[in-house]
Structure formats: C-alpha cells, structure tokens
Length: 399
Image 1: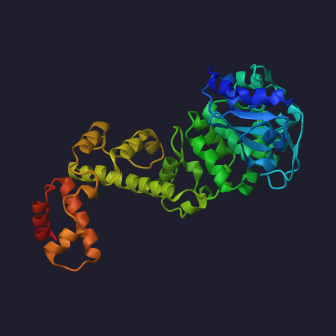
Image 2: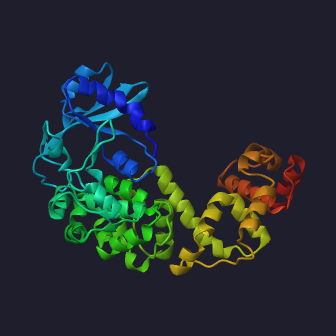
Image 3: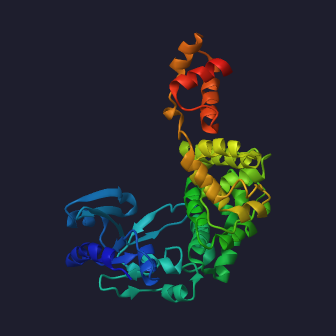
C-alpha cells in the first residue's frame, strides 16, 4: 500500500486543521488505498468554505467555486479541495437545483453514490465510514449510499458508473442496487452523451467487462443511448476488454445495414476517423488472399492495429464478424511484412506529383492522385524499386 500521494498532500490537511477546519481524504483514492490498488488523484473534503480555502492558501484556482471546489496549488501540484456540501432537489436526473455548504462530514458523504466511495480518511489514516463501505469492499459489493431509487433519481449517470466499477473491480451489484438500476435505466436518456461516453470508455476496458456488458443488455440500457439505440445489442457478445473505439468498429461491421451517425456520440474527429479506419480494415481483411495483397494491407493499416484486431479472434468468431486465413494472418507474417516494407508512407517515395507531371507533360487533374496511388502500390508490392529513374520509367509505361 503506497502512502506517497497522501503524504504529499498531507500539508494541505494540516494547514486547514491548523486554521480550525476539518479536512479529510475522500473518494476513489481512499477506496483504492483500502483495496491496496495504485492511487491516482487525491481528493480532499473540508469544512472550510471556498472563500475560507482561498484565504488559507497562497495560491488557489477557483475551478468550480460555485459548487464548492477550489484547486490548491502546493509544491507544483494541484489538489482539488471541496467544501462539505449537501444538495437540493434534482429535476433532471443530472444535477441538483441547489448546493448547500455544510460543516458536517456526515452530511457530505451521505450524498455520495456508493458506499465504497463514501469513506473519508484523516491524515493519520483513520477512516470515517458511516455506511459500512469498508465492509462492502471486503465483501466485493457495489451498494448505494442509502436508498438506490433516491441515488439514481438524483443522477442517472450513477447507474453507468456502478456498472463501470463492476467492470473494473469484478464486484457484485447488491440486489437492491441492481433492481434500482433496472427500474431507473430509462432516466439515462436525459444525460448528456459526453458524460455517458466517458464512463463507457472506462467500462469497455475493464477486466470484468463481460458482466457489466451483460447487465447493460439486460437493462436495455443501449435503447436510451444515442448512436447505440440504432443497433440490436442483443446480437453482440463482449467478453474481452477493448477500447470503446474497437467495440464500435466491431458493432458497425457486424450490423452494416444500421444507419447510425458517429457524430451522435460527440466524440473527437480523430476518434471518428480511427473508428471508420478500423471498420474499413476489418471489412477488407477477408479479401486479403495473397502475400502481395498482405504487403499492401499491412502498409495501409499498420501492423499494430492489425495485430490488435487479430487478438480478438474469439470475439470476431462469436459475433460472426469475419474469418481470415491463419496462414496469411498470423503474428509472425504480419511482423515480417512490416519489417520488410520498402517504404512506410507516401512521403518516402522517391518521386512526387511534380515529377510525374513533368515526365508525362500533362496538366494536373484528378488523375494525378490515382497515379500516385498506383506508384505507391507498385513500390509496396515489389513491382518497382523506390528509385526515381526506375519510377519515372514505370510511370511512362504503366500510366
């Protein structure tokens, strides 16, 4: 169990306490510490108000002051320090209408999502566990703080978060929590797709993703999520952890007639391009039937992504996505082809568009792009050496 990050943040708690405020570590870092897992971000909760936090520390950043959160800069690091708070009513299953600052730790932790995330710890590593979170960790249970219906009615994202924790930790969903998720699943339709995607990216990468994915299907969760609501997820089997991008590409290839727009996911253009590229690659793999075509395929898509897709052979078979020849597509062959490619990109060609225009004495046009691709393919397939005089000769005789 590492205490390094807690020790680094300890002066923050000491400073607050020296000014007669309470201060505790709280949330995921405490949970992971108790589970003897690596710790990442440290969150601190305190009885000091945002104004008081700013008064106590020399350098602060008001990243979410209206919600009680101030970033304290100390020794070059930033620490999120949040005032104990209670919340008003929720009208949209997403955010409270009001946030109230309070002076009582219990009032703060009782509004949190799951018992394992509601454990506070002081700077002497003594825990304050009002809801038996440690016991639930020991029993490997995901259980809401208080009534599941209330917690999920407040913020429906907690349903997806709970399933994400199940995927990452392999814990069991406590019966009332499971039933509460099932009952309130339709409320996720009111969440922003950005918030859902953040959780799904973590969920699909989880070691125990099969359990969470099956629960998502059982709850009919995908019916309420843009983009995914166009697909029949009952046809898809997900048993191995993978990136959300890879999962989406597999789904699109499995159900090619579905007209769903990646733009509905509000992901970056780079992510959309990567998914489209994976989709195209998977569709083309069965067409590769020779060493020559394999050379061009590896050149176009790169060994890394091809090997990544091939590592999911069982899933590809289970979902009837594709079958490829093991004599052509195997790790040794892919790596060998990759090592021996004459060029790795068009930039390495010993000829360019200007050279071709001069050699053929023709005006530029759409044909030039096609010609450059022809030359590229000829080099990769070994038909011609990547040597300017030979390339110009090849162009004059083949174009």
